[in-house]
Length: 115
Length: 114
Image (cartoon, rainbow over all chains, first blue to last red; front, side, top):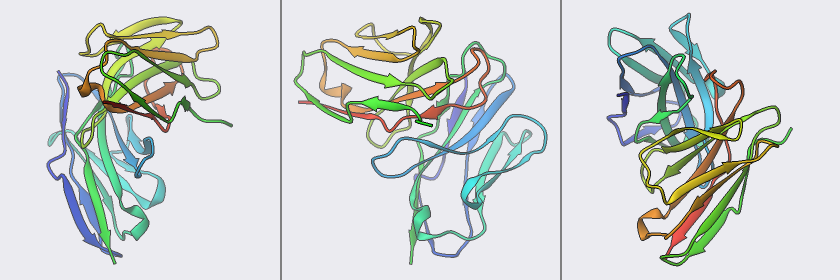
């Protein structure tokens, strides 16, 4: 069975500082990997996705993530955060070529950007 | 281009009642998935509909049922509501049947059971 672990429930960071949100997954098959962002009282918005090819994936709002198969990780990074980046971030995995595109989510990491 | 729309946005129900939530997928999408997001948790997969049939189901009891209409819109029904059913219910749409490259989410329906 697949699972996703986001070890950090909350990450406080000062504005303009870099940030890394960690995500590890377990799966017995090849996977697709995603990062979603959720602002308060909103649905989920896709930040970026890894399907295949280059292991460094660039997304919206200056975020990027690196797929590391040997470490089974897909950490999210941003070189300089803004107050507006304060939100909940979810890492998710789905089966490569599976019968559905069911997403398995982690428990989320709250990015709290302070002035 | 309208994205995924869900209705209602908020709902308060009493234990034991039944509720129906609605979802219209993004234009061009034919697959609808439903997720339950309890407070402080990540979304949990309930089920997915494609070609008007339930294609896969997560670990949810039979009290949770759904339907997909010919126009690809979908309903989620929950019977005999429990306090623990209080959550944000998210609908996600995608295209292409077995392809799973991206899901677009709606704003969700916040269900409170009292």
